[in-house]
Amino acid sequence: MPVFTPEYLHKVAYEIYRGKGVSHEEATVVATHQVKANLVGHDSHGMIHVPEYCERIDKGHIVPGAPFVVERETPTTAVINGNWGFGFVVTEKAMRIAIAKAKATGVAVVTVHYQSHIGRVGDYPTMALQEGLIAMVTADSGAGPKAVAPFGGRARRLGTNPICIGVPSDLPGPVLLDMATSAVAAGKITLARNRKEQVPLGWIVDKDGNPTTDPNDYAKGGAILPVGADQGHKGYGLSFMVEMFSGLLTGLGFGIDPKARHNDGVFISVFQVENFRPLAQFKKEMKEFAEFVKTSPPAKGFTEVLYPGELEYKTELKRRKEGIFIEDETWHEITELMEGLKVTSKVGRP
Ligand code: NAD
Image 1: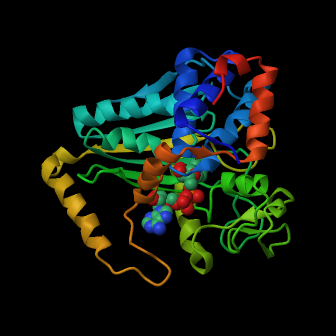
Image 2: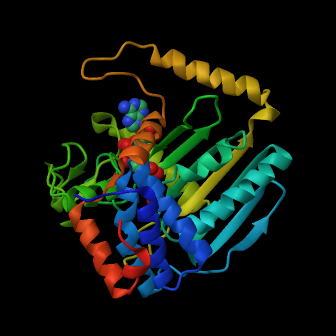
């Protein structure tokens, strides 16, 4: 497996998108989000998607430079139509609007429809927590292809429907719960397949509903399970509500339309801590709370208790020092893309 610096991978993704006709600004935003996903350890949302996003540009499913339209607006709310732009670009702008409104009024809710994949959700609430706001973001795929079986069912009816909550604190890393409401994000099944690894039991079932560890069974008509294993009804319930916020409230709809483009409907809610308590006091207490939780002695098989977001923070510190591994299959696809677009010499050597 090759190992690269984040700067080099950023250059690779940036030049590939520039080669596909994407503007400097949008190529920078997309490359930054993808490399950040690799940095924090969510390789399923990083460079592995570069070839797929390029295919989507070719098919017209991602429209670089698409107009960002505010369809409805009040002092506390906005409805955004991304016109099939890059999800990273559209949702970043939508989050900026939500932050500005929450700073002015105390709270804000913004929904987004018609955009492509937003990648790792954690980046957007991080923008808010850095400005002293608490943010929750949920996403779902509307009538796009499904991945997850509802609790008690064996056929796909839901997306992996992530939920992410970011909170300001005095801790060095962001307090950030960022999780799929399925046992795992779909990208991790692709990653396991590319790395020729098995997946843990409890992640997926095959097309007949049998538990399996072979990631290939997912592509052959299987399904991912809701988070929670034998308590999967709770993960399923969360997923159902995420779809309500990001599919139904956004107007994207639900169901399965085989011709639908990949679409991340997004619900953003942001509120200002200062409207409830002095921010400095809250941030200090959040740190003390996390430290208190971490005083629990580790259970067998664990070395320490982590607060939400801590693992990603530690992984980023490590990968900034040691580099980022990209599996051969993904790197091979990326190299072919660079050659096809004649950008290899612009990227240069690692
Ligand atoms: P995951 O199972 O690794 O869970 C991640 C969450 O659990 C993080 O908040 C992390 O800090 C926390 N965590 C992990 N290990 C921990 C530990 N030992 N102790 C305490 N907390 C711990 O990730 P996932 O659910 O597979 O999601 C991975 C990524 O996929 C996320 O970044 C998510 O945003 C992204 N995703 C995106 C989409 C989309 O459509 N854009 C869909 C699904 C998932």
